[in-house]
Length: 410
Image (spheres, rainbow, N blue to C red):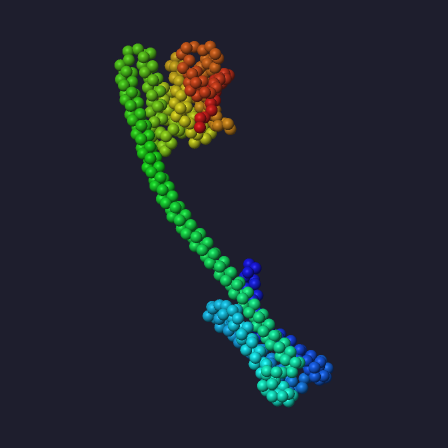
């Protein structure tokens, strides 16, 4: 940033103004010489009101200085217009040019001394001037040389700054080209990675599609085999001679059909390891109704989108089926209509709370106690081992409330 500021400051330097400054210095020195050497009035008079001949000579010298400044300024502007360097001026050319203008000034001073002040011949004034005139001429020439040296210094500094700026610009261009190349390589690498990711994604989608197809095939095959078992059980039910055998086969068929319902739902769903509890229980209740095992089941679920994993859906369906079987036995025993209400809700801690209400307070014994009859051991194990839940009953004059609470697996 500082280099750019210095270049800008040197760029706006105008050699015309520098020439005017040196011209003013020369004007004052001429006036001092006239007052001290030739005793021509006061300094103020010689500065602001010199005699006509002295005024003409001063103007002549000033014109030489200004011509020198104008030439330097013109050379600089032409070089900048063509975007060329001024290093040829910084190698001594400007000093030589100032000596040429100094020589012109020396000759004009000699001409003035001869023709105006009548001081000998022209050759004498050129080669052997009087001491005062000699030192004044030397002083004026020194000013021109100093002027040239100052201009040379400005040009050299400007050229150095320009070279430095060019070096910095070239370095920045190289860095930019390197970064662009790195970005292109990175972009190509990213494109390769993107293509690889797309290919992996397509491959993964294909694998998922194949997995989905295989799982659907497994559910379809499982359902088909279970339907074959149901058909065999239907034959056994029709051929059973004892009512006890017929009821046993019927209960087994209901259990198997609950598995068929589960595989049917999983086959039609995109979720292969979870069952929609509301739909599942509704299908089981409809099957019980059509099988004339019980004629009225009311299911109330606070959230129709509760999902239960397969590992819990199967034992839970067996538990519900077993309770419905017990109710059916009571109905056949007392020839009385039954009414079930199944209330299901999900608790805040991701557990499932199930309340089964029936008007018969003696529908189930106290199976939550440690000592229970052998025929209820399987029912107890479904809740304790398979569901890992709790079970308790509440009896009153209105019937019985069977409560089951278990934690849903993730």
